Length: 340
Image (cartoon, rainbow, N blue to C red; front, side, top):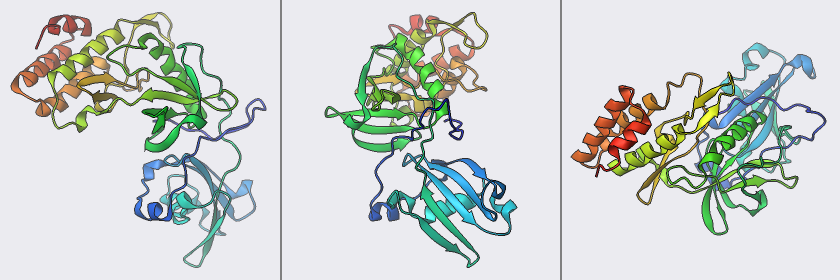
């Protein structure tokens, strides 16, 4: 999802934390299982940088959007405990009931009668590269305080209400995410109001008008969560990829003109609502990505068993074959335009 890096002093600019979510009630803490993937380690500090016999892990709870220090007081076995990948750190943080604890309260824990630990929330900010939203696309600037009933969905994504309607808020959690957001908005500006792509509704800003994330309309559920898949969904998606690949861009790494690309074609980036399928998360590409054609052919192969009827399945199989044979999205879109 991202590669976080520790915050640091950046040109004297005051650091800012992520926009945290409310602490959980006692009942919620007891009933909720903490997923290890929701705890991201930023760094561990060796005793040499601190008081002798003490080490610290810097951790962010992604679900809560909150940052923590986990301080271990011990005289021996430092090599066993200093590794950020060691489950020890997450275990201690969870044991402190941090998701339901007051922000300013510190907790001391005894472990096997040998070591004592203190967990406390970090007060200093962690992001130093936040900036105002780009001028394009021209969107509303909405204060984050106007968002109601924010609820964690996954990763950096939340659901919320604004003006009484349901939206998705994609939040910037780390400095390393800012350039990704900038790149994504540079791509999305070409698809505002495109019927096959979920377009942003607004920038979410703080009191300094720094961009804290992007607001998108609620667009339904992932296609692989549906009990069946219709051919009309696949046709919508093909038309969307046709439009994406019709945009000629300047290659950010090597210069020159290149054909547009979604860059992350997977089931999780396809949403369906009210009989329409649309793409999300355009503009980010992994290093080992094999291209939109191969990726969409793989998506169709996964969805074949969910085809609503024989005609739906036959059309999906034809398109999968064409994609693997190298037929362009533009040519496929022409061929299928009048398919029922």
